[in-house]
Image (cartoon, rainbow, N blue to C red):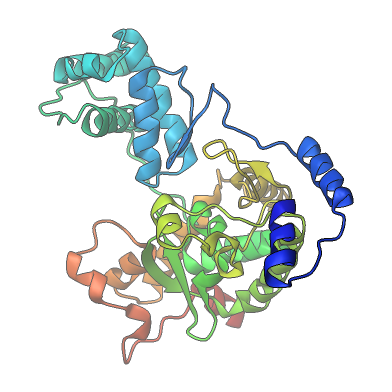
Length: 377
């Protein structure tokens, strides 16, 4: 840098270079205080983030594939847990060894889960999906004819609250938690749908909320309850102030799924991509190692919900998904076609042609949130 300044002085400005000893000293001190960091030997950093080379090769590759697919970290942890158990059981140290195994070992593993460990149906399904990804993405091998003993799945009807119970429950919330509860019921959101909302996902002028999948892709549009508008605007302004402070302190880069990060390399600093419900503290991303501000953890709302249920004296096993069940039921009670409700909820069994049907913009149909109907009554 000093030589560059000297060259500029003599060749461009054609003047004598002043003594630059002070600058040399300052730069030398800066280099000593801020040495150039190199990746640690125990960490492999690539496009998929930090991969621990101490893990078996199939596990490393599974992590890489899940990240390239844009799976959430919670999914990665769950899949890796089952893959580790499988790898340990059959002493699989390499991808080549994994390729030698197949349906017989997977069937045996899943059967043992149901018979010996008596796991729930959902747990066995998660293990199966994990092994499916392990073989498909890592071993490049398709599993067919899995005939494992299936864990029994109890038949349960979804818990639905009455409109009066919904009102009593919502009355127990305040501030940010009230806004979240209103969105869960008023828009039929899952808790993760809500907490993953980014600033750009709210269309105030259209009265719509864009819900994205874990890859950050547009998944569906649902109704924006009028009751939530003022609270959302206030929450977004709070998120803006927090983001500006993060930028000032040298941070402010939010997590983006891999495909979006590749397509929009500078978007992670833009306010439009920030979470509406940011966490109170920054944390280190376990995949990339970067320090970021993630969205609020679902356990924060779960605790607030538990307190609200107790105060409302509703003696039912209520959880965040209960709001979504109630939204769907109350929409049907209000006379909306089941296909409209399916589209608003984003259910997978909606017919393929319905992806082209934008309910909220269809002439002659005006969707009104049950939350707004309750408040107007």
